Amino acid sequence: MRKIQLKQKPPYWLSLGCGEREENEFLKDKFAPPPLHKEFIGLDERDMGQEIVWKILNGIPLPDESVKFIWASHIMEHFDNTEIMEVMEECWRVLQHKGLLEIRCPADTSTVSNMPFHKSFIHWNYFDIFFNGSRLDRYGYHSWELVEREKYHTERGDDFKFILKK
Image 1 (cartoon, one colour):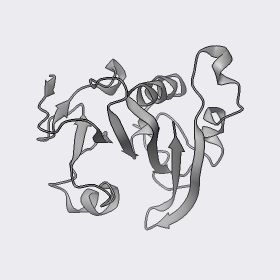
Image 2 (image 1 turned 90 degrees about the horizontal axis):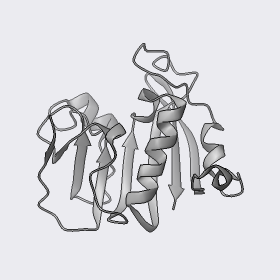
Image 3 (image 1 turned 30 degrees about the horizontal axis):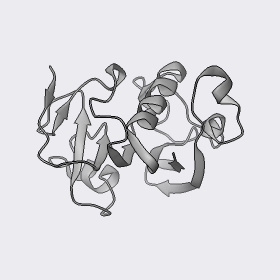
Image 4 (image 1 turned 135 degrees about the vertical axis):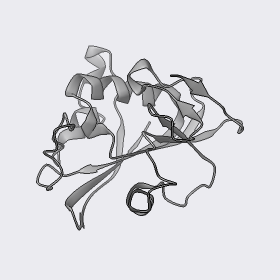
């Protein structure tokens, strides 16, 4: 099923893999976008009432450079390494110049990191390959600027936060 119902005009604030943030209090508290902007649009492959129902690996169905901020909370670990490369390139494509991508994910030491539906185990240096100077451009990929990297504790274990700038 595919659905796109956008009421806002660009620039967008996108919640990638938004999940059930409105219906589930646990998810709302733990994974909802920060209160930076009230007009986040949601994208998830399951229809939970969000604006975009779409499989992320089919690309992000938004125009080039139309997004100011992407919130990707607890979604990257659901992709394998090759898929993460594809998702990162799609984020680059839709983000405006100097746009931000905030990634939150369980640390590789977290009790939830080994769930069967997690395809990647994210460690502290996992995203270093994407940072400026990594020479990814030699392979046709874009490099990002690291703005912030943090490890923080939750009741499930440790999580990581990575903020990258286009």
